[in-house]
Image (cartoon, rainbow, N blue to C red; front, side, top):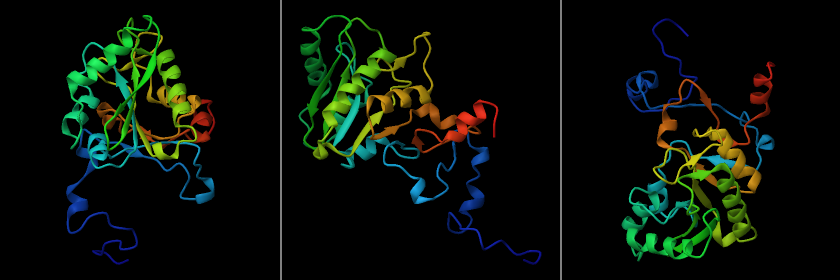
Length: 236
């Protein structure tokens, strides 16, 4: 390649000057995606959770991309929850914030303060499996999340009509977020591990704050590649 010429061997992302104008290094909200398999089909596994970087959960649900949606709900306040936003905007839905809340309250009246249920909302276009926050809990605990996804996995097992599925990651929510045993929000890796070990194999959508992780590299599926554990152990 002579001086003054551009490298035409690398694929271009945008037309015209788009690649020059969209310099991610200057953006606050960005992530760095790392390849987990190197593009080798045999290295891919269907036994995984796909992490939906770059996708808008509400738009995907309202566009009927999924048959089952997993989220959290409580019997006190869901005014800022995604399930309310979806119900209010989904054509043909007979659910709204008040009815969703009343449905959750009906179940909490029959359970103990530490008990947890997964309740269903049929929104015609898809079904919602909502982890009902125990009445005596201000937030979801890791134990709540584990139990909830074990129930979700059993409800999905052998039910191909409920696939594909999508879930929130239960991080950064108002009242339906998960809090670790130390009183602090857990890492996304901890949340993904709990979902995976419980048997969930659908998609999960990162929380808004996770769009500011750069320059830390992110993977597009869980389990993460073994190389991460080798690096943590001091290897390469």
